Length: 511
Ligand code: HXC
Image 1 (cartoon, rainbow, N blue to C red):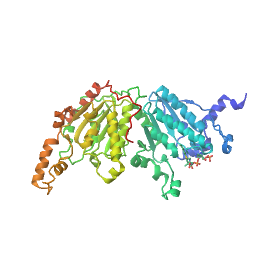
Image 2 (image 1 turned 45 degrees about the vertical axis):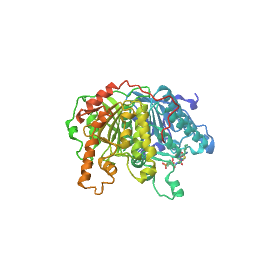
Image 3 (image 1 turned 180 degrees about the horizontal axis):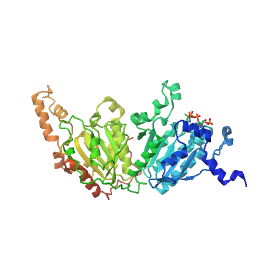
Image 4 (image 1 turned 45 degrees about the horizontal axis):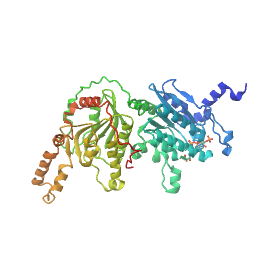
């Protein structure tokens, strides 16, 4: 028998990856190996590996003498919570997980199969980037993955977990996927690393400071989620997947709840502060309205003036967009617009209804905002809501001022059910600002009795939901404690909603 092609030996060898020493090094860094990660992520014994015997075909720089079965990435199919999943897991113990041509072909193969079968793809990234010895072939390999990420976008969910370095052009695969999870202390993402920065821009910064989990969760918004361990990342995927369907032709899963639809929490009826300038915590509103313990916040640490969460109403998955008056008074700015726009588009692509809670004093004023392009970034959110055809339900809890009123899933842009609490103020702007403009010539002393009276008059006339309700711009004014039941009924009514946009190649969202 030819030892070279011995069944048992080859299988055993394939499972060894880069060998004992390299595995030890990986463990010493507090990291799991590629196969251990797949085991932790997937349901027990559900993994069927493919392409275990693939090796590279390069002979540059002595590579022909260094062939490792699997070529530095573990790929295959398995289950998460009983649902089919395609997975790849880069093996840092083999050439630093670097991506050569065959390594890329393995990833492309599972992506092609996942796309045809309507199955989500989960990528575990841990790689030194383009395999330097293979040169341009590895660049080609990357591009073939980027193409597939793009073609899969909006058809099957794609989740990236970063579990090591992810540098250079390699960052663009996770960037195109729907969700990117970073782990404290082991995940790094940047286009150009600290060494290059030192040379080119003379900036001194370490891996963590340039592209660690915290930076991407709080500053760049590249991380949809930041977690503190690999185990937590896998746990999160198991949770996240429960809100999301297998593909764009399916509905998200239904998760039965013991939380009754009629549950009405009376404290909500007096929750909104009487003083319109006083903040409150919108997250408490969401926690109260949605099924018990059903919220999962996305981009928690980024643009905190808007909340984007998944949640459930009577077992049905929803996307939630809500202003957070605790931060920047809940105004819309560049970051919050982009954050919410991407979330709304994800939900729309995957048949997840969007519930919008509005308390927005307007767009954030400022030179930085204007020069930073709030016009085009704010337009993204407007565009995302306008084009979305999933069920759209809106609750105005307090302020809905100016252009931000229009943007936040208003009736005029195909909001299906638009409700307001009695505390809602729907107007072009706040009463003080309005009086300053309309009575410009009269207002000398802002604290004068006359001005106070004018402000009071304006507030009484416009800062309420009744004028909007007279025109049918809000469908009803409801007691806050009724919100849960009303949302559940509205979702039920809308469950077979069909709407579409004019036929076209694609729209031109203001990027
Ligand atoms: C080939 C690589 C490699 C690479 C690492 N290795 N990166 N081999 N191509 N890109 C190998 C190392 O030679 C080493 O092999 C093993 O992997 C482990 O690497 P170490 O350096 O020992 O590990 P560590 O100290 O943990 O450092 C990890 C690292 C570093 C930070 C990732 O290896 C590194 O800086 N690598 C180069 C990164 C890089 O410049 N990549 C190209 C970027 S350009 P041995 O045999 O000693 O075990 C790019 C463009 C993508 O990616 C373009 C897409 C369009």
